[in-house]
Length: 463
Ligand code: UDX
Ligand code: UDX
Image 1 (cartoon, helix red, strand yellow):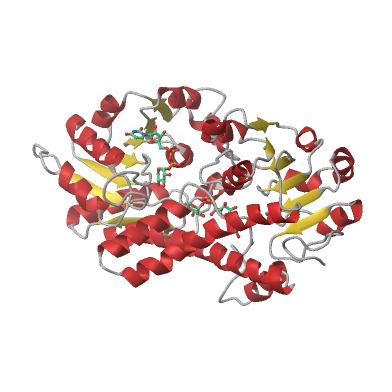
Image 2: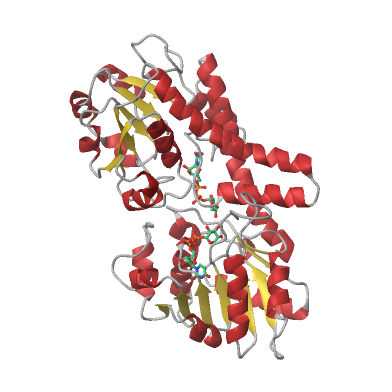
């Protein structure tokens, strides 16, 4: 039996460890966190994150070979392999503020591992980190190790929220980076063996440490770049009466381009894309690669433009004022099937409309608690309403900000009847049947498509 520890019971640690535990019943897994409330939630029936399929795997493994605890020191001492998935937010102070990763939790964790270790261990970076962080980790761990040896591996997480469990059960690839020394290679093989219990061997890639660390940043940068690319074209479509869905379909049929990740939207969110690209930008600047830095920075700037553009189109289309107008925001989560609101474009749009003094009602099936937390500084200015019918009652406009499939199934005739007229729909996810809405009487504005409106042209163009 191997004792496997994960430090950090967030989205990453909390969704990967139960799956690993379910495939490796002979090993013991413990997930620890400094946040007592979070650990208590992991031990209860009300898990701290919503992720389809997670509850089942946790029920199957918890109390058998998967345990949640706040006793970090004791479990470090017992562990053979330690995964580290503590958060690495963007640094908000000093050198690199707003761009570089804040590594204070990471370094603190490294020192804590060293302090509590009485045997040699494999330490696995699971958090996304700037390139060459493993080197710093190795230096700290081997600084005063009393004859103990620490192998540091990089095993970045590629799972996407909402499909995390599915992604983990059937990954496109597992990436493991390690040192090309005898002990480094042995450590890599140990980690490979864990994954090989269910992942085909040819999908487990092993590389050097730096390639592995960099690949994670680059994967996220490429994914985000596709969204910013199609979103930039959506702005052009709105000017030319081309339809961005038709363009995306036409280009995506080229196998070299591919069809996925070409959905134009109000913008990308989530804890990773923005943070990882800014990290990449910082790294390039650090090495004097200013042109490369500017190139990737544009992906983030385009996303900010798209969010701003959406909100200002709303205002322009509603006769240049939303002050005092009730607006129902459908969706707070950064994407469907998650309760996560980190970097959600819904929050950016909400803030922009509040600046225009709109009267905001926000609805979401799972993410209202998190949204309320994130928008605490605006307490009292937003109504949170889980029922979309109640949210839209008396509203001048609905804005679709998260692509929850249930929003496509609502009775829009009923909604239309209950709204102020003229009634507007702004579909930031191109989720709804726009022609049907138009026929019901709505003025419909979407992303990268001609607007369907009976009004004169006030904003995104008319049909
Ligand atoms: C985060 C980052 O967003 C991601 O980019 C990175 O790859 C891994 O960390 P996530 O799991 O989504 O991913 O973060 P979060 O939900 O914030 O979880 C991190 C957990 O670590 C928190 O529960 C926090 O309490 C815990 N933590 C943090 C510790 O246990 N010890 C610390 O010193 C700091
Ligand atoms: C992402 C990566 O996909 C994953 O591999 C990595 O480990 C973590 O970051 P995640 O942030 O959970 O995962 O979600 P993802 O599905 O990538 O979506 C990110 C954002 O892009 C969402 O706001 C989503 O709505 C948006 N998006 C995605 C689009 O606007 N259009 C698309 O075509 C795809």
